[in-house]
Image (cartoon, rainbow, N blue to C red; front, side, top):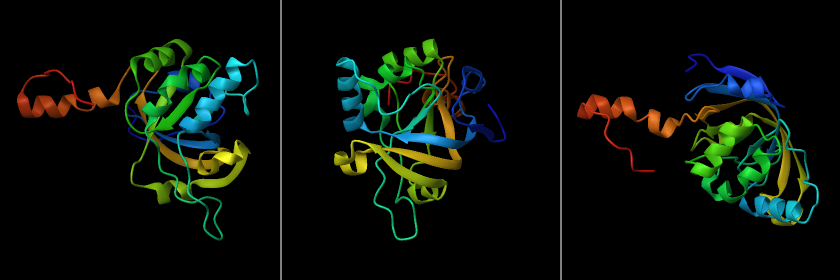
Length: 197
């Protein structure tokens, strides 16, 4: 676990993500793409019909967010993370095409975690309740696909030092499990079973 933030700029390589551990604080810069469940459903339909995605996922990071409309003088409104499990039915389609990172909140299912290990992808957690702070790290926002979805349209973001935490690394580490263990041992004296989300 890194004590100091790790600075990474997209697109990311296998080497970039394989060097990350659960709990590492990362400052992401460069291009991110936004997509929520409605957009992911369209991705799946497009791929199933042999079509092309609105962006090449190779080396890229998707932020699960539906930003609010921008206020005057700003490029984007609040931009807090969406629950990642809503994208689980579609995530593997992008991971196997070279996606290197996903940003959201909450746990991922076992199928997604297995794909992350196989194809070298990481899952980052964004700070919940800090949507305004996150928005200040976003330098530009451009809708690139599915404008009819409104706030769930696919956008191209340019970010500078967006703070995220590694929740799941490429070796199967899980912050939701490992982060609880020291607390459990300190208060119960035994590891116990983690059966809660």
